[in-house]
Length: 189
Ligand SMILES: [Mn+2]
Image (tube, rainbow, N blue to C red; front, side, top):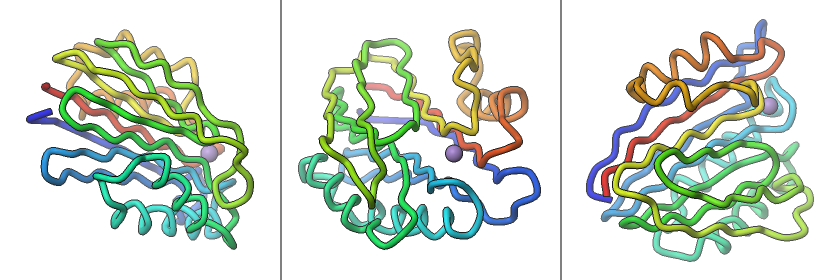
């Protein structure tokens, strides 16, 4: 993956100042990490959990196996309220990803057979289901928390830039009753 273009939007639940959702984007030595975290519920305690997760993901090795990273993330969140998170590691055309809970991941321009793992990071996860795939030359990844409608018609937004897609999703498909986050990445292999 030589280049990528990414955009994100994250807003708290209506009436809240703290945002329990968080985004981590890193690129190091040709490796890319993309993650969306949703601290359980909303408000301060959710924000504490997602901040802990962000801090862990900000320093995690991008060269290690992602499953080890997910186990580390699970351990780092113990003592917090817990979180859902979907984490993607990209290296060349290869993507490895794992999602615990309900942060959705969609891939356009390629097949990504992701199966989310049930559970709550920091509390209980029986099994980390890992997904590995080769992405096509031009792929778009979209991650979003459950503050965004599942029925968000992302496939009708492929002509939009990643920035405009994030704006449109937040404007038109956000649920005011929860923190809402969307991340879009265009990848050029
Ligand atoms: Mn949520």
